[in-house]
Length: 284
Image (tube, rainbow, N blue to C red):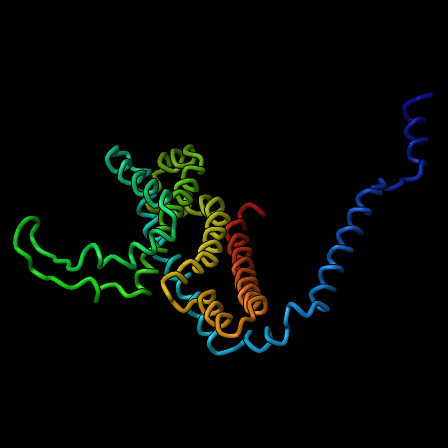
């Protein structure tokens, strides 16, 4: 039989889709578990949905959500601004500057966030008075540290410094992921260094930076709950205050949980569109 005859025989055979019976078993099992979970949410009185509905849009909760968003925005902006500076130090050709950047990252990644926050909250215990002037010489301006850093300011400083250590490594990893050969080719063509960074390095580095940066922002958003130890009225602290009065612990925790889910989802949607913008060259 010739190869042509064999190909004709094969083309006449019916095409049957591959069967995956265990895949369908897994789908059914997951759907059953989800249905049981939803049924428990609806029928179990322990969830206390009336209390949840009462407090979900309460003024105190909405104010606390606003405080959480402010902490996240300030911690992210200041943290990534400082993180870029630290990343530049790490990428410097100077060994001294590299050591400074590495030491900063090592220190702030080693100390737990809650310890850093409490340190800045109690900075006036260590330094009651700060002054500006000539080193080891006369003072020009002095002020009390109690008046310098408020609890909110201490929270922002702690979150930003902590975030900067992780942001620096994210930015550095994104920059070094760009093929250096492209910069050599751009330099050979006479393209200025600023344009090389803006048109060649940055678009490619952003594709590596954005997923990790978005994860850090989301982690920071949820990590703002740690500032509750400083009695700052963010979401988790306000929930604790309310359930400390009415003992409706589960319902109030669900209020915080649903708000965290909503805001995290919005951040994830924003991440998707920003990533798609910087990946438009890849799609072409």
